[in-house]
Length: 412
Image 1 (cartoon, rainbow, N blue to C red):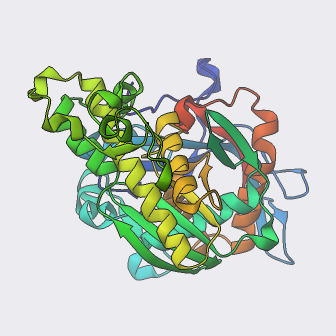
Image 2: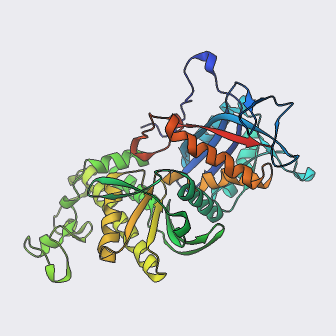
Image 3: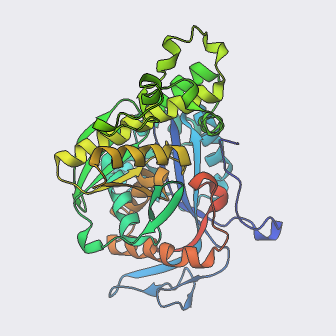
């Protein structure tokens, strides 16, 4: 699969070219760069009442303040951080469309910038200035993750689902009973955040065994060249060839006294101890599957233990490690169910990999848009997107740029 996933989604007819782009935001993590940007339709804008209006005569909103409602699409894309030049080239290729770069209100900082979050917003800030002449206006990573998650949980229909025995079930979230909850964001590492409300949260735990571990070990053990390739490889594998199961220890039977079935993994990679085989004797797909199970089990267990610690019943999992992958979700779900004795369920998000960058996108309110207007623009995006996009069915649950969605953006 092409890691860049940056195909323009508009009608391939040349007469239907991409309009002006604005409010581009980045989440630059240790493994992946996530991108969200709004592209304006080339036709006329409308005011908040749905009436046509030109840029010279925008509609009136909230008293004397004027706003224009821009019709367009919100686009999603991702890149490997190790191939950041692909991201820079992608942004550069659209620079002639980027008429909507924001400007700081402070004259001393009056320069072009885009919103960015994640550690890479600091690490690569000079690179963006050097290559694109663009500043990165940095937003706190945890703030963005929580803001993005809260928005999705409150506003997006059919956003949350459980995954049990290969069956996906969408849940309706009661907005009045949302908090507190545990947000488990699985990126290169894992952060576990107790969320008590809008802007009210605490990072209560985490683990360094996350998506980066899966990718790094997987690359060493299987020679896969990309995260998606490794996930696809695991799909074809059989972890029982490498993992030591309870049944392997107990002669094919369960250890029912403590609730362990014969198929429960007793030791990840445990069979490699006694097989007298070299790494090349194992199929790469079996190694990938065993590695995926090991890391997913670990994350599921630690997540539940932290939920138990704070008395939380709702655990939401996000991050690009998941990517809607059945075996990942199944393993996490089984781990949470097992350790909670069925009292808790793992819940997943359709926009799992874009929480932080959506939060960064929403943070433009601090400089150019009123908070309520940003919320209304995102709400407009949500309310109209699924109904108007009947073909929405992203592969592996991944929101790539070629699955963008129509929306409206209120601007000052």
